[in-house]
Length: 201
Image 1 (cartoon, helix red, strand yellow):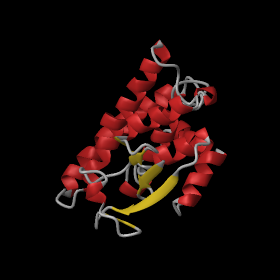
Image 2 (cartoon, helix red, strand yellow; image 1 turned 120 degrees about the vertical axis):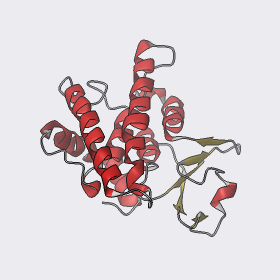
Image 3 (cartoon, helix red, strand yellow; image 1 turned 30 degrees about the vertical axis):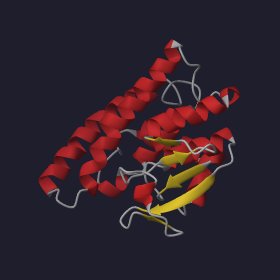
Image 4 (cartoon, helix red, strand yellow; image 1 turned 180 degrees about the vertical axis):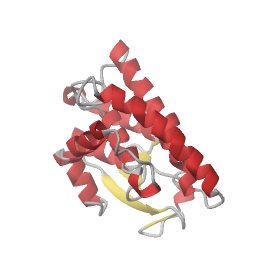
């Protein structure tokens, strides 16, 4: 199994999931500007969309899109309880959480990676992201993790996206639960290992 990643990008989420699951996988670093791997492989040939993450399975099948990849990883090791069982209401809540993170948070940061975006656009994005993070803060008032008492793959994804807030001027200081959450998730050994492996520790 191979995970194609770029340090600090959204591919950190499945990197964390692999570590939490204890699944061995080769990590392949991608230069997203050049669309090349460290070994010089053409990344367009791996993922025609040109972005990370991509998971290549041992049989050659390819999975793209972080929310799908982390669920695949979780389902390989159900005993780790990184995702509720398929078909349960709790699993649909996990999928709702992953969709929220993807559509309302992850996508909201896209403007900061767009060289054509002006400051007005970025300020509008900061305002909207602040509103979305207030919702996250209210959820975390109910438990230590995004879905309650247990760490799931949604937490690895949320942690990954929340790390982008400070560098892009999204102020979370009025929501101390978010800082506590970042510290809580960030202190997990599997998360620390992923950060170290990506040169982010």
